[in-house]
Length: 182
Image 1 (cartoon, helix red, strand yellow):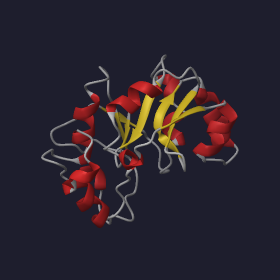
Image 2 (tube, one colour):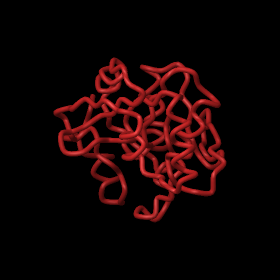
Image 3 (cartoon, rainbow, N blue to C red):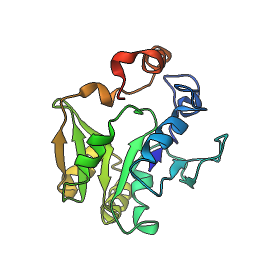
Image 4 (cartoon, rainbow, N blue to C red):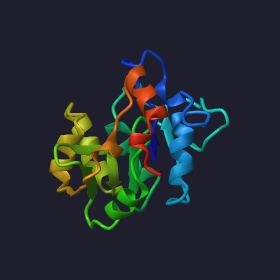
């Protein structure tokens, strides 16, 4: 699942809709890449906004926090779901495949310095814990991971986790071959 329902406040515009490397948007680019690994890909978003259209899962929440989407995984899925933010489109396919081999309710990528909570597999069973956390006012994925007993894999290529939040970062990721994953 691609998360594309954020505010994009640092970008000043909806970054998920920005044209990227010859694709209609960053989200289209990531969707096309993920088709190599997954048969069923949905884009979690607050509204149908993609042209050409993409299969979407309307999140239906006013809040801008990924835990709300995770809290509903058990309503849509039975097997672990790979979750990635639309603004990290350079994650390598081999990273996703290696993460899929971890046997854990949460399997997260790490670059040795940071856990990447929006690059990993979430089992639908964690939705119950996420709902309780929301009820308690805790929206932090770091706390969800701790409560669920996550496992992580460390990957040497930290550039693949490059996060596009500003116009400068967008330009760098869009044209810079040094962050290429191909």
